[in-house]
Length: 247
Image (cartoon, rainbow, N blue to C red; front, side, top):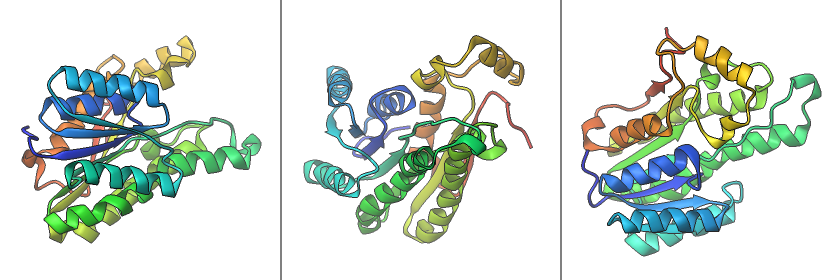
Protein backbone atom coordinates (compact mmCIF):
# COMPACT_ATOMS: atom_id res chain seq x y z
CA UNK A 1 0.00 0.00 0.00
CA UNK A 2 2.43 2.61 -1.27
CA UNK A 3 1.24 6.16 -0.55
CA UNK A 4 4.40 7.96 -1.67
CA UNK A 5 3.58 11.35 -3.13
CA UNK A 6 0.23 11.54 -1.36
CA UNK A 7 -0.78 14.22 1.12
CA UNK A 8 -3.09 13.22 3.99
CA UNK A 9 -5.10 15.36 6.40
CA UNK A 10 -6.17 13.61 9.62
CA UNK A 11 -8.50 15.13 12.23
CA UNK A 12 -8.56 14.11 15.89
CA UNK A 13 -4.93 13.09 15.38
CA UNK A 14 -3.54 13.88 18.82
CA UNK A 15 -4.43 10.49 20.33
CA UNK A 16 -6.11 7.13 19.84
CA UNK A 17 -7.34 6.06 16.42
CA UNK A 18 -6.45 9.35 14.73
CA UNK A 19 -2.87 9.20 15.95
CA UNK A 20 -2.52 5.59 14.78
CA UNK A 21 -3.95 6.51 11.37
CA UNK A 22 -1.48 9.37 10.95
CA UNK A 23 1.45 7.12 11.85
CA UNK A 24 0.30 4.35 9.52
CA UNK A 25 -0.24 6.69 6.56
CA UNK A 26 3.21 8.18 7.15
CA UNK A 27 4.78 4.72 7.38
CA UNK A 28 3.27 3.96 3.99
CA UNK A 29 4.85 7.04 2.45
CA UNK A 30 2.29 9.84 2.75
CA UNK A 31 3.11 13.25 4.17
CA UNK A 32 0.56 14.02 6.87
CA UNK A 33 -1.13 17.14 8.22
CA UNK A 34 -2.27 16.25 11.73
CA UNK A 35 -5.09 18.31 13.23
CA UNK A 36 -6.54 18.48 16.74
CA UNK A 37 -6.86 20.97 19.59
CA UNK A 38 -3.79 19.95 21.57
CA UNK A 39 -0.70 21.53 20.00
CA UNK A 40 1.73 19.78 22.36
CA UNK A 41 0.47 16.30 21.50
CA UNK A 42 0.46 17.16 17.80
CA UNK A 43 4.05 18.36 18.01
CA UNK A 44 5.04 15.06 19.66
CA UNK A 45 3.29 13.13 16.88
CA UNK A 46 4.90 15.21 14.14
CA UNK A 47 8.26 14.66 15.81
CA UNK A 48 7.71 10.90 15.90
CA UNK A 49 6.80 10.86 12.20
CA UNK A 50 9.87 12.96 11.36
CA UNK A 51 12.14 10.73 13.45
CA UNK A 52 10.97 7.76 11.37
CA UNK A 53 11.88 9.57 8.16
CA UNK A 54 8.47 11.01 7.32
CA UNK A 55 7.03 14.51 7.06
CA UNK A 56 4.22 15.98 9.13
CA UNK A 57 2.58 19.34 9.75
CA UNK A 58 1.01 19.94 13.18
CA UNK A 59 -2.14 22.07 12.98
CA UNK A 60 -3.86 23.03 16.23
CA UNK A 61 -7.51 23.70 15.42
CA UNK A 62 -11.08 23.10 16.54
CA UNK A 63 -12.92 21.10 13.87
CA UNK A 64 -16.19 22.72 14.94
CA UNK A 65 -14.90 26.15 13.91
CA UNK A 66 -15.33 26.67 10.16
CA UNK A 67 -12.72 29.41 9.97
CA UNK A 68 -10.14 27.26 11.76
CA UNK A 69 -10.87 24.32 9.44
CA UNK A 70 -10.45 26.58 6.40
CA UNK A 71 -7.16 27.94 7.75
CA UNK A 72 -5.84 24.46 8.53
CA UNK A 73 -6.64 23.05 5.10
CA UNK A 74 -5.15 26.13 3.42
CA UNK A 75 -1.98 25.70 5.47
CA UNK A 76 -1.63 22.06 4.37
CA UNK A 77 -2.21 22.96 0.73
CA UNK A 78 0.25 25.86 1.00
CA UNK A 79 2.84 23.46 2.45
CA UNK A 80 2.43 20.59 -0.02
CA UNK A 81 0.26 21.89 -2.88
CA UNK A 82 -2.70 19.55 -2.42
CA UNK A 83 -4.64 17.21 -0.16
CA UNK A 84 -5.19 13.68 -1.51
CA UNK A 85 -6.47 11.84 1.55
CA UNK A 86 -8.89 13.10 4.20
CA UNK A 87 -9.49 11.08 7.37
CA UNK A 88 -12.43 12.48 9.35
CA UNK A 89 -11.74 10.97 12.75
CA UNK A 90 -12.41 13.74 15.29
CA UNK A 91 -15.00 12.58 17.80
CA UNK A 92 -16.30 13.01 21.33
CA UNK A 93 -18.92 11.44 23.58
CA UNK A 94 -21.36 13.08 25.98
CA UNK A 95 -23.31 10.05 27.18
CA UNK A 96 -26.70 10.34 28.86
CA UNK A 97 -30.20 8.94 28.51
CA UNK A 98 -32.25 11.06 26.11
CA UNK A 99 -34.71 12.09 28.81
CA UNK A 100 -31.84 13.68 30.75
CA UNK A 101 -29.58 14.76 27.88
CA UNK A 102 -28.84 18.47 27.74
CA UNK A 103 -29.24 20.19 24.39
CA UNK A 104 -25.66 21.43 24.68
CA UNK A 105 -24.40 17.82 24.88
CA UNK A 106 -26.45 16.84 21.83
CA UNK A 107 -25.13 19.81 19.85
CA UNK A 108 -21.51 19.30 20.89
CA UNK A 109 -21.45 15.68 19.72
CA UNK A 110 -23.25 16.33 16.43
CA UNK A 111 -21.01 19.31 15.71
CA UNK A 112 -17.74 17.55 16.53
CA UNK A 113 -18.52 14.13 15.06
CA UNK A 114 -20.65 14.97 12.02
CA UNK A 115 -20.66 18.64 11.06
CA UNK A 116 -16.86 18.74 11.23
CA UNK A 117 -16.68 16.05 8.54
CA UNK A 118 -18.83 18.17 6.24
CA UNK A 119 -16.64 21.21 6.92
CA UNK A 120 -13.42 19.32 6.19
CA UNK A 121 -14.78 17.67 3.05
CA UNK A 122 -15.91 21.05 1.73
CA UNK A 123 -12.40 22.46 2.17
CA UNK A 124 -10.45 19.59 0.56
CA UNK A 125 -12.79 18.55 -2.23
CA UNK A 126 -11.61 21.31 -4.58
CA UNK A 127 -8.04 19.97 -4.43
CA UNK A 128 -9.25 16.42 -5.11
CA UNK A 129 -11.50 17.47 -8.01
CA UNK A 130 -8.69 19.47 -9.58
CA UNK A 131 -6.35 16.47 -9.68
CA UNK A 132 -9.14 13.94 -10.30
CA UNK A 133 -7.96 11.73 -7.42
CA UNK A 134 -8.98 11.56 -3.82
CA UNK A 135 -9.76 9.42 -0.82
CA UNK A 136 -12.27 10.50 1.83
CA UNK A 137 -12.44 8.18 4.83
CA UNK A 138 -14.92 8.80 7.63
CA UNK A 139 -14.48 7.06 10.98
CA UNK A 140 -17.95 6.00 12.08
CA UNK A 141 -18.78 3.38 14.74
CA UNK A 142 -20.55 0.09 15.27
CA UNK A 143 -22.96 2.08 17.45
CA UNK A 144 -23.93 4.13 14.42
CA UNK A 145 -25.10 0.83 12.93
CA UNK A 146 -26.75 -0.86 15.91
CA UNK A 147 -27.41 1.95 18.40
CA UNK A 148 -26.44 2.09 22.06
CA UNK A 149 -28.51 3.06 25.08
CA UNK A 150 -27.27 6.31 26.58
CA UNK A 151 -25.55 7.34 23.35
CA UNK A 152 -28.36 8.74 21.20
CA UNK A 153 -26.25 11.76 20.25
CA UNK A 154 -23.15 9.68 19.48
CA UNK A 155 -25.07 6.98 17.57
CA UNK A 156 -26.95 9.62 15.56
CA UNK A 157 -23.72 11.41 14.66
CA UNK A 158 -22.03 8.19 13.57
CA UNK A 159 -25.07 7.02 11.59
CA UNK A 160 -25.05 10.44 9.94
CA UNK A 161 -21.46 9.87 8.85
CA UNK A 162 -22.54 6.72 7.03
CA UNK A 163 -25.19 8.66 5.12
CA UNK A 164 -22.66 11.41 4.35
CA UNK A 165 -20.21 8.78 3.10
CA UNK A 166 -22.71 7.33 0.62
CA UNK A 167 -23.89 10.74 -0.58
CA UNK A 168 -20.32 11.88 -1.22
CA UNK A 169 -19.46 8.62 -2.97
CA UNK A 170 -22.25 9.34 -5.46
CA UNK A 171 -21.35 13.03 -5.85
CA UNK A 172 -17.67 12.63 -6.69
CA UNK A 173 -17.24 9.06 -7.94
CA UNK A 174 -17.05 10.15 -11.57
CA UNK A 175 -13.95 12.22 -10.71
CA UNK A 176 -11.99 9.21 -9.42
CA UNK A 177 -12.61 10.18 -5.80
CA UNK A 178 -13.73 7.48 -3.40
CA UNK A 179 -15.54 8.00 -0.11
CA UNK A 180 -15.72 5.20 2.41
CA UNK A 181 -16.29 4.73 6.13
CA UNK A 182 -14.54 2.57 8.70
CA UNK A 183 -16.75 1.41 11.57
CA UNK A 184 -14.67 0.36 14.59
CA UNK A 185 -16.19 -1.81 17.27
CA UNK A 186 -14.75 -1.89 20.78
CA UNK A 187 -11.24 -0.42 20.45
CA UNK A 188 -8.84 0.17 23.34
CA UNK A 189 -8.33 3.95 23.41
CA UNK A 190 -8.27 6.80 25.92
CA UNK A 191 -11.99 7.25 25.23
CA UNK A 192 -12.79 3.67 26.27
CA UNK A 193 -10.19 3.46 29.07
CA UNK A 194 -12.53 5.13 31.53
CA UNK A 195 -15.33 2.62 31.08
CA UNK A 196 -16.16 0.28 33.95
CA UNK A 197 -14.51 -3.15 33.91
CA UNK A 198 -17.91 -4.83 34.03
CA UNK A 199 -18.96 -2.97 30.88
CA UNK A 200 -15.75 -4.02 29.13
CA UNK A 201 -16.18 -7.66 30.14
CA UNK A 202 -19.74 -7.71 28.86
CA UNK A 203 -18.63 -6.07 25.62
CA UNK A 204 -15.97 -8.73 25.00
CA UNK A 205 -18.64 -11.44 25.40
CA UNK A 206 -20.40 -9.95 22.34
CA UNK A 207 -17.26 -10.14 20.19
CA UNK A 208 -16.76 -13.47 18.36
CA UNK A 209 -12.98 -12.97 18.20
CA UNK A 210 -13.03 -12.68 21.99
CA UNK A 211 -10.87 -9.60 22.35
CA UNK A 212 -10.92 -5.84 22.25
CA UNK A 213 -9.48 -4.25 19.12
CA UNK A 214 -6.32 -2.13 18.87
CA UNK A 215 -5.98 1.26 17.21
CA UNK A 216 -3.72 -0.29 14.58
CA UNK A 217 -6.57 -2.58 13.52
CA UNK A 218 -8.45 0.55 12.46
CA UNK A 219 -5.38 2.30 11.04
CA UNK A 220 -4.64 -0.67 8.78
CA UNK A 221 -8.16 -0.47 7.34
CA UNK A 222 -7.78 3.27 6.76
CA UNK A 223 -4.43 2.81 5.01
CA UNK A 224 -5.97 0.19 2.72
CA UNK A 225 -8.90 2.43 1.76
CA UNK A 226 -6.46 5.28 1.09
CA UNK A 227 -4.40 3.15 -1.27
CA UNK A 228 -4.57 2.39 -4.98
CA UNK A 229 -5.50 -1.19 -4.07
CA UNK A 230 -8.91 0.11 -2.91
CA UNK A 231 -9.59 2.16 -6.06
CA UNK A 232 -12.80 0.25 -6.92
CA UNK A 233 -14.32 0.52 -3.44
CA UNK A 234 -16.58 3.47 -2.67
CA UNK A 235 -19.70 4.12 -0.60
CA UNK A 236 -18.69 1.21 1.61
CA UNK A 237 -18.66 0.78 5.39
CA UNK A 238 -15.73 -1.42 6.42
CA UNK A 239 -16.48 -3.06 9.76
CA UNK A 240 -13.50 -3.46 12.08
CA UNK A 241 -15.25 -4.96 15.08
CA UNK A 242 -14.08 -8.55 15.64
CA UNK A 243 -17.44 -9.82 14.41
CA UNK A 244 -19.48 -7.79 16.90
CA UNK A 245 -21.97 -6.85 14.18
CA UNK A 246 -22.95 -9.28 11.44
CA UNK A 247 -25.67 -9.23 8.85
